[in-house]
Each structure stands twice: as C-alpha cells, then as structure tokens.
Amino acid sequence: MITGKTESGFEFELADNIKDDYEVVEALVRYFKKLTYENFVTFKDLMFRGAEDCEKRAKDFLRERDGYITVAAMNELVFAI
View 1 (spheres, rainbow, N blue to C red):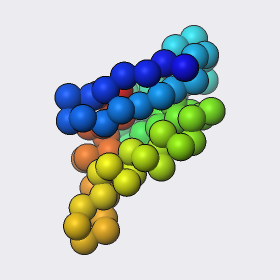
View 2: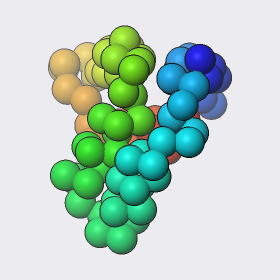
View 3: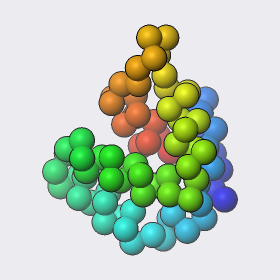
View 4: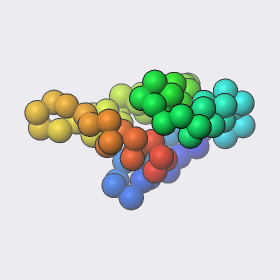
C-alpha cells in the first residue's frame, strides 16, 4: 500500500500498483486535456480503485456541517494525494 498524509491532515492508503496503472495515467491526461467533472470523476474513481475505504474516508473528511462535499474540496484533496 502507498500511504501518506495531505497538508490538510487526511491520511490515505492507495493500492501499490496505482503509480504504474495505465488507465489512471490515461484518465489523468484526459482530465487535463479537457477539465470536466466527468473526466475528474473517472480519474478519481480509478485512483481509489482497490482502496474504496479511502474514498469513503475522503468523503467523510471533506463533508461540511450541512452534509455536502464541494467539488472544489474533493478536487483539491485528490490532487494533494
């Protein structure tokens, strides 16, 4: 597992093979070519593949008092990881 902690204090664990996963790199390139919500979600889903509890913990970490998670907050966290 790849582990770390973002500056905001979120501790994460990702699958070891994520750094050499072609589909993750492909999704990241697609996102940067066209900054759309759909491309971001695809990248995020692939990045958290094999570490689903990490995505759930990320959502819980980012959830505001009113129960919402902003797109900007998830975007910032994903790229901090």
